[in-house]
Image (cartoon, rainbow, N blue to C red; front, top):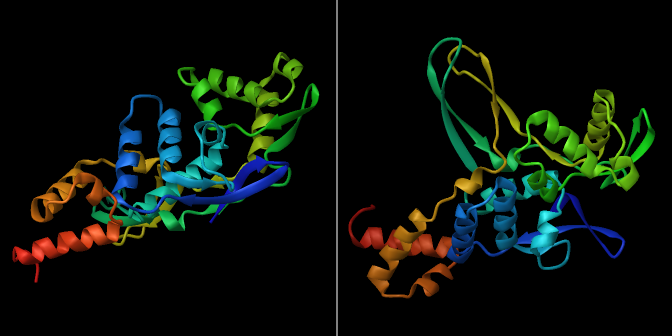
Length: 264
């Protein structure tokens, strides 16, 4: 599996990644990382560091995950949701045109992905000060501009992405900031965050925003309940149950329900 962007090691762009096996241990690690105190970027870093087994040909560490470009981080969070069994998310809405309620399904695996452009992870913007060298923003940059209002955050993020210390002290006009944003967008990998669906009754088209960090809502309560049911039946330890692959754990749960006459 490959990242749309990637990490640089030893002068080479490395795109390979792999998640840890889908066991209860992984699910618990993700749930605990998602529930940890801290900002959204910090929680994303914690979850991905816990979930990844390989990142660019090496075990992941906090600094590398924190320094991934934003597009790669969003991509990995969507792929992690699918890896955890959340391939499909159902939403219920009421049509603004005809008033009829309907359900629609978002499939994380089908979210469009734009690969990184030429020059990744660097870009050049043509500004009033001439061409300025840039790098793509990372999770660390997102965290650094938290708490600023939108205009301040845009400028602060642009300055952080400038590669030259002297350039960071230059006055930046609105046009300069727009040029920087466009230059970064041309190079950055991206995942689609908007989806459209038509009302089955009247055909009106609705546009929805997809949250790439949706699996941060992954809670451990269901996992605790499943561990409890298996432990009460087989008297295995929590560690033994969490070490089971998810498919095997669910199979045991099915057998428990079958023995209780809950399934046909």
